[in-house]
Image 1: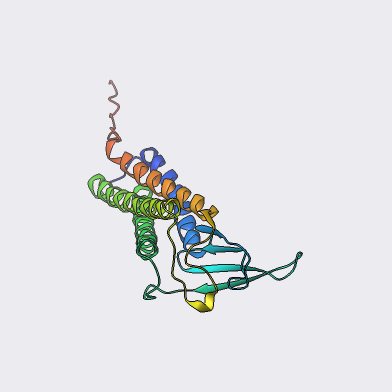
Image 2: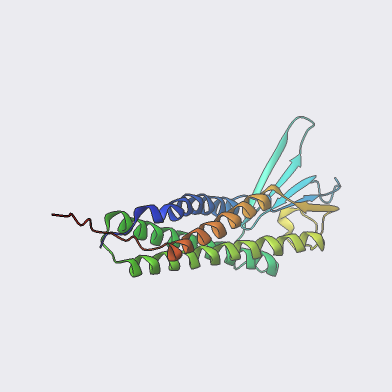
Length: 215
């Protein structure tokens, strides 16, 4: 049964937006600028700036006035010094990435059947609906991770990093980094992609009216 291709325009747009959302979500996991720590330069902690991410912390050592040495330390989910909010962000962003990719795959399958016309309308609707639910769930996961990071910064939460990192438990000041903005974009794009996927269920059926010729 051939499906009306024009009714899937929202889903094509949702596929493009969702693809960008997946890219931004994966980028946010790899970047370290979730939190920016500002610290006094002391003999005990000879560091001026540190960027705390979900999977790593990058430390900027001021070795001279014209040069900065950057040292990044990766950490794992099993590391005992990680606070609950970072562990939650790791889980939520990983889940969002998987859900986003699975939703993208379902959108590709649904759009293929729409344009080829190899599925009846109800099956295509179910694929779009499932993909939309996965995308909205992924966007919600990213949003929760962003909110947790914001409240940790607002509450001036500290992290007991290992002594080898040469970082204090709490900085002199901290703020939300630029990666937070990347994660917000990822969440908005995932949510928008999911909502656009739902629109196919309200598109009207295409009706074909036969032309009756008078003899």
